Length: 304
Image 1 (tube, rainbow, N blue to C red):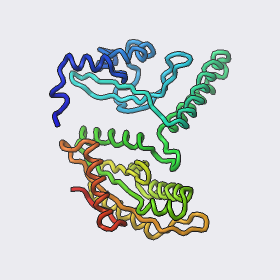
Image 2 (cartoon, rainbow, N blue to C red):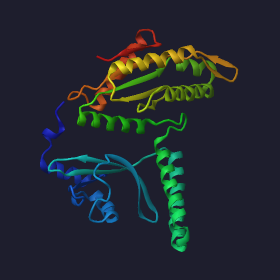
Image 3 (cartoon, one colour):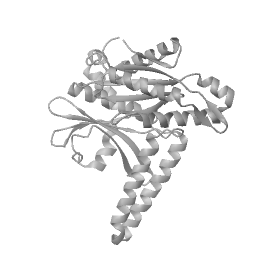
Image 4 (cartoon, one colour):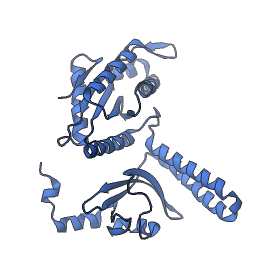
């Protein structure tokens, strides 16, 4: 497959940025805006003529209030570019319906706090604290899996993308593990979906409590989980996989009157700097996990 940067011409790029819905701006090293696309115009009206944040924060979420009825929670990315400049991307977060309703309620609270603060200077400090709490809640809603209360797919993929960028920049190690709950369909068929949901919750909590800082875990999809191990080689990931598999194997999960034996199939992979992208790293770990399934489950396989 051709590298897209090698085949897209300057006129093509101008058309792409003209019609792109993601807000894009180029920032000078002093924080001033050098160039931007039409989608960034509403953001520039709010920010003014310069970027107020430090040019060190690579990824964050922020609520932007464009007018009384237009409030958006956005994923923001700051990417180093040539000539000591930076590229700023701002993309509105799309959430499931339940999360969207919750975020809308939180936005209404933000507006209420802003109005009240104008009427009472004495309460300004307390309202600021409450506003920060509301923003924090909005971020948590967009990042948390509703069933297991760990990172959802979007959040854990964002973590992986950031860790790959960091590993490439500083030439450090990075490994991941994809974990699948063995025979989960049989568990659902035998005990029902409520029991299956409880199994997933308990597996997620065991994984969360069984990893070490700064490792993070998220629900990758269905009965699959993704663990990110910064500054770790595949040997460390293998040792972790052995420990987590043993922990799950030796401690059956109890749900109501049911005692259910749960095992894990795990695929691990280490980032090959200069060769892997975050997608190919995921694909290698996923293939290794399926190899563990083929070997009989309840084991781990290291990707080539």
